[in-house]
Amino acid sequence: MEDKEMKGKKSTSPASVSETEERAQMTVKEGIINSFEIIKQVESGLVELARSTVSDTIRASGTVANEAVTVAGDVVKGVVAAAREAGTGLLDGTKSIAKGIIIGVSEVGGDVVSAAGRTTREAVKGAADVGADVALVARRAVDGVVEAAREIGGNVNELSKAAVGGAIEAAGSIGESAVGAVRGVMMGVVSGVKDLAGAALPSREEPKAK
Image (cartoon, rainbow, N blue to C red; front, side, top):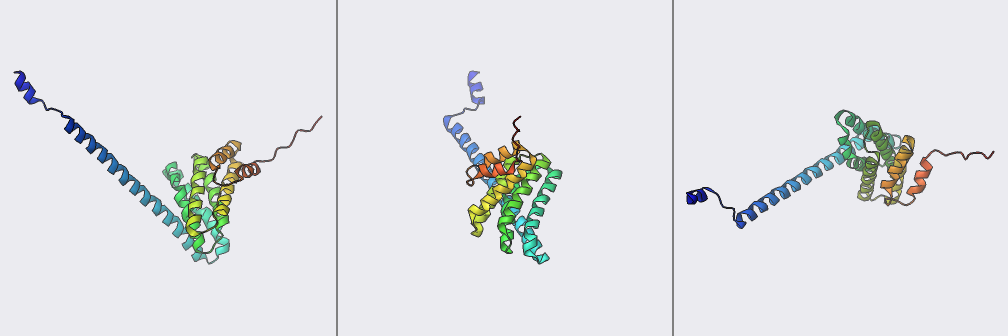
């Protein structure tokens, strides 16, 4: 009787356990790699969408100098408008959008420095409007500008300062806590972040001595 019960049971040898673990690890590994590939494709698509929107719009208008910065802001506003309807998760693509904007402005000979400031400014304002993480969106936007600056061979430090300045300026219109949060995530991006943050805050009048 015991022999029959033993025959009916499947033995789990160390070898079979090891094979099962290896298969599980391989499945997870392949799933993660595939997921990253999908993310890369999405990010690349967002960069191209922003780039083509900016460059095509500016070329169609025929007024590069006047339109470049305005269009940069309009593209970000479009992303924010979509986030209002589809959810704040759309703002996760802020980095790619910012990168595409700067590349697009550069392609048509626009003012990339002003565009950098306008892009991050609108991104921060938009994040606050839809209740997203202002500091996180600000950092992603700045990172996108920095990546674009390297790709187009621009002045990375100058564009970084403009981007950080735009983000902190927008945070200043939201409140001191927003400035503190944005300043915190920007430390290390460019020098002088503390001074930029101080300039963004409204000046306080010293109490008069009685």
